[in-house]
Image (cartoon, rainbow, N blue to C red; front, side, top):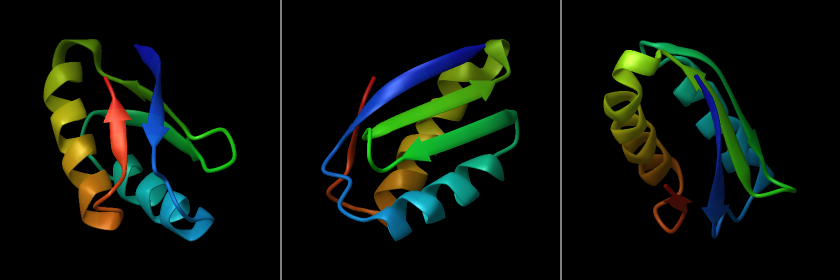
Length: 72
């Protein structure tokens, strides 16, 4: 399953790269891209575990950029 999410208050391109790298390491994630310019997260992950994976994704994003929010 592939979905796109808006990101609010993603402040730097370096943080976006760190988020992308960390999200791609989460079990069940097939691919993830974080676009700093578009303020978007595109994620492809196992459909059966998608909600659980997204909870981990949100935690990961908060670790890297505490002010950044994912519009679910």
